[in-house]
Amino acid sequence: MGYLVRSTTLRQVVLQNNPEKVEVMKLNIAGFHSLVVNKTVEVLSAFANAIESRDEYTRLHSGKVAELSLRIAQHLGLPERQIRSLYWSSIVHDVGKIGVPEYILLKTTALTNDEFARMKEHPRIGARILEPISSFKSLIPTVYHHHERYDGKGYPDGLSGNAIPLHSRILAVADSYDAMTSDRCYRTRLPHYQVMEEIRINRGIQLDPDVTDALLSISKNGGLQSDLDSIEYII
Image 1: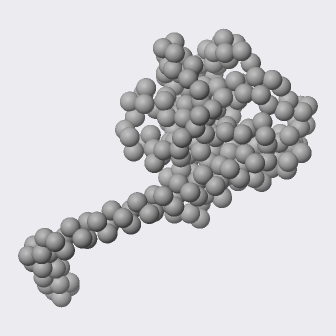
Image 2 (image 1 turned 60 degrees about the vertical axis):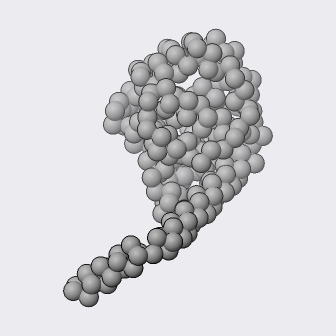
Image 3 (image 1 turned 90 degrees about the horizontal axis):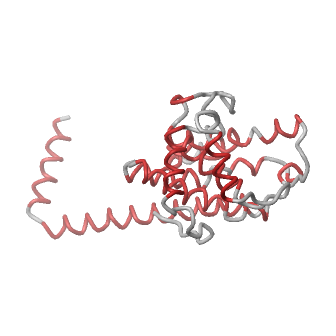
């Protein structure tokens, strides 16, 4: 222990007398951090591309949901670090669909009970895919719980109200909005006014009231009229 203290003290003295070395160390640390962030972005983007390559109807879905989640989080005043985490959770929220058979993902008629049970496994599968990657662990709760409902009738755990992670509640609203405003293999997109009415009806039932109000406010101020198809990943 005494050696460790002496070594630390000696290092501090050396650094204090060599400001140039301190600056070099700072640059090296900054460069390493930038490299890690860039690699993380590449992996997350690859995940999103892998998900959406299986279904032309969900092309850019993850990016649009992430962009809308970001806007809602900003409207709610979340700290920037939380917003960044939510953004990337949204990018990979459907990664578990890699484990769902393609005939279920692309089915144009109603799913059977067994097929729907398979579909409901995708949050669990997504969590298992992300779990071995240490830098993605903070994203797992959002991905795992993004199909919970505010009234407790969702999945996989049937959580309700504030027991559902806030990021998952935000993602659920953004996901619902984009799903209804996009063409899918089983139906065409709904008109914007009809989507907003569905959002209002499900306030406090399927969707968190405060998050729903944030989306309604963004819509009222014209924040949903911009083109969500133009996606630019952020760091």
